[in-house]
Amino acid sequence: MSTCPVTHLTVAVHPAWTKEHKKAGYTKVIQRIGQDILLAAITADRDVTLDTLDNDLLQKVTQEPGYSQEHLYLLWDMTHVINLSSTYKKETASIIYNPGNPFKAIIFYNVDSRARTLTETFAAIVQDTIPVYIQETYTEAVSTIMEIKNGTTPSYGDEDPSRARQATKKREFLAIMGRMSWLGMLDQNIAIPPHDDPYYVFFKAMEQLQQDLQENISQESRELDFIRKNSEELLREQNIQLNAQQELYKQLKQQLEKEKSALTSRLASQEMELTRISTAIAEKTSTLKHLLEIIRDLDIEPQQKQQMQSACESMIETEMIEKKLNIELTATDSEFLVKLQKKHPNLNQRELRIGLLIKLNYDTREIARSIGISTRGMESIRYRMHKKIGLSRHQSIKSYLNELAMTA
Image 1 (cartoon, rainbow, N blue to C red):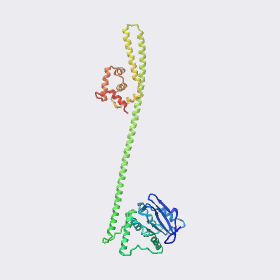
Image 2: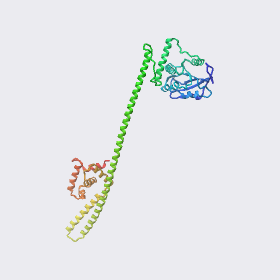
Image 3: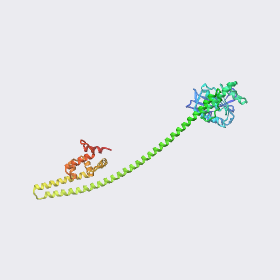
């Protein structure tokens, strides 16, 4: 252990009495001189801004067993300290307004000129609670503590009444500014000197600044309240729109399910009808083939027999085409019919069927024979379908139907 060169008291150190501030670039170290003097300093390789007050570190040191826990004196070596963070400034309230504060005095020394005003501001704020002194050297700082312990109140310096009043007004001014800036106290009572006082303008300006800050905060509060209300109203409207969209989606989904169910039922009915037609065609074809065999065995005039055979063969061919056209309805064909009916609800069932056959590359003669009309009649139906669909003269109905089949 080392000893203090001024008091010759033992200087105690402990590994737990340090705290590293990596981002700020320094380490805070506290030592104890004798029983009741704490020495705070930082180790750093550059000038730094103190970021936090380190109340936890102070509490750890002050509550160390075997040492005095009250009536303490704090020495602050300000070497390398040039600024204080806003967090540090706010945390000073724990010293200023803490009734259990153990410090009888705080003495700063080695204060850089860039941190002088900050240190004086701190001293001005806490002056009513804890005596604060600013000295040049370690020796002067420790000597100040010894004077206090001996019952002597250290002098602030100049005894000239004018200079003393100037120092007092400076402390009052810094205290007002510090409470406003550091602690956010914007409702403090500011004692304004008389109009003819040379310091009147400074304290009046500080009073006006406090009023302006109060008004700015009130205005910001009103603006935030306005924004909050507008946000709540906007959120309410958006929720209404979202609920409406969800309800619309629900209704649309129900409608689509209903249409799907109807189309499924219709397809099932059409499949049953196709099965019935296919069965009837098969029976009819079988009968025609049997009739053809009978005609071939008839002993009649050859020319008449040939005419009868040709007519019978023609009917068989027609029935075979009819059967082919009615039974080869794939899932793709069914989807196409649904698309065509949805796109052009003005087409009747026969026209829908003809549209499918046109898409499947059946020629006019085959389609005409399958539905029992002449080729010329089939051409008339195609012309009417062309107009119903809304195609121009030069548009191909077959190309249009193929394009429709390819759409999603």
